[in-house]
Image (cartoon, rainbow, N blue to C red; front, side):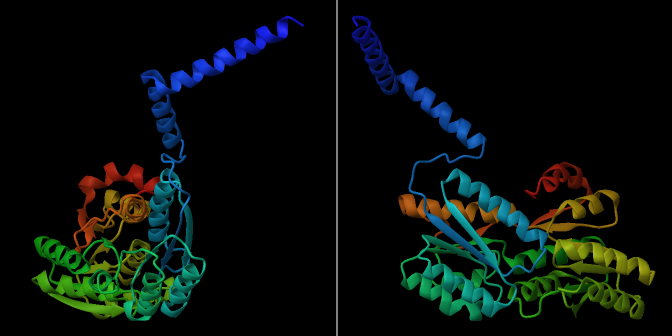
Amino acid sequence: MARFPTWVGIALAGALSLSLAGCSSTGGKRAEDARKAATAQGGAAVNTPRWTFAMITHSGDGDTFWDIVQNGARQAARKDNINFLYSHDDEAQQQAQLVDAAVDKKVDGIIVSLAKPDALKAAVLRAEKAGIPVITVNSGSAESKAFGALTHIGQDETVAGEAVGEELSKRGRKKALCVLHEQGNVGHEQRCAGVAKTFTGTVENLYVNGTNMPDVQSAIEAKLQADRSVDAVVTLGAPYADTAVKAKKDAGSKAEIDTFDLNASVAAGLKNGTLGFAVDQQPYLQGYEAVDLLWLYKYNADALGGGKPVLTGPQIVTKDQAAALEEYTKRGTR
């Protein structure tokens, strides 16, 4: 019986020792090391409340661009202890209903793309009225502030288009076909308008049904067969670059295929020369920063941009950079 108090004393002493160690510099270092380890393993790096953020985009099914955006958002959500909800619809009215649903759920923050801003305005303003902070991402930089969003994260579509026009001119191209795969998308219109503004040659817009790749291919092929003066085709999304390459081959055209956005397939095309250049707007960064900036606002009332968009692009990527970026595209972060 005499042993029992002895073991109790040892246990209490040990507990006290651990408690004191937690207050020491060694204990603090251990806590910091544990925090870093949790971050490295994809765990939360903060102890803030588990807020819920909803991202609602205009993505269609199977769009690899938005997979990369999601990868960035989910990584930041893990780090920031955020419950992350993602939904999408390429029909603007349906997307607005998804925003309304997020408001009804009383989420703590909303991230939304504004490809067709007029259709989203009422829903975004409803979120603001409910006291839910909103960050716009990817499209709608011109409308973001007017809709009451904290900031916009993405590239300036007009500036990106202008960069393409300048690159085409530098390459000595004379006539470019700008392929718009989503009618009514203001960002797409701005891109092609930007190309036309700085390109020393001529630009013709070609509207296609982006939800039907065979139709996209046949439309580009028909145009290239009908007009042999087209020496450059610019697609507005990475998945359409491969389709344009196939259309070029079937049409017997010598036009250079260039594209907006980057993925593993585009990186490989740049590397092997089937694509001329790509415009990277860094979608991983758009998703990551959108979640991180919402967290900073909730935690510390921080806001970036000073009322101006936080730009993630454009960056012109050519064969010279393709090999270095290929590793990142394969893991879904570029």
